[in-house]
Amino acid sequence: MSLEAMPIVDAKLDYDAHFLTITQADLLLEQLLAELPWRHDEITVYGKSHLMPRLHCYQSAQNLHYQYSNLTLQSEPFHPKVLQLKRYIEAVSGFKFNAVLINLYRDGADKMGWHSDDEAALGTQPCIASISLGAMRSFKLRHRQKLASDISLELTHGSLLLMHGEMQGHWQHSLPVRKKVSQARINLTFRHIING
Ligand SMILES: O=C(O)CCC(=O)C(=O)O
Ligand SMILES: [Mn+2]
Image (cartoon, rainbow, N blue to C red; front, side, top):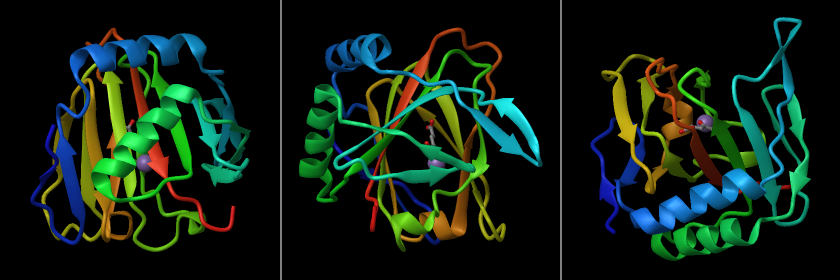
């Protein structure tokens, strides 16, 4: 286990491909798939309602509400394994988190479009800690003013990615479709919500 700083312009990005052991990651994937109250919500894009191209579950410490993609997320209490994971990331990174957005990409057809996690409730220069479980998927990054080349990271089972510094101000990220992927992937993004 070791976090490595990745070279990136105008932002901070640290990555550990083996943050969790394979055994820990396998167990966590199996438990979260079975035990989380997954939601399949609709979002409104340009006035039209669509089912989201993924499932999700939002958990926080004191029912901190969070608005995202025109959707107010219903908060669940932390699942004990998620709380344990949060504490482990806090100990390693030195950052504190009070909420987590958990996404389930059922297969390679599920995706997330280009965005920044720049909601006012996250404050300036937020640190977002992203844990990936299951299928390896490409995580794409692009600089908003095109002052650097696009970046593509293959996020492995059990990996930790920390996005901080000016990342959300200067860069967008996305998880594109991968037609050949038939396995599920879970991603947990731990966040710190201010004025929840
Ligand atoms: O699934 C991922 O790796 C990214 C998820 C993400 O960007 C988000 O939840 O805001
Ligand atoms: Mn994001």
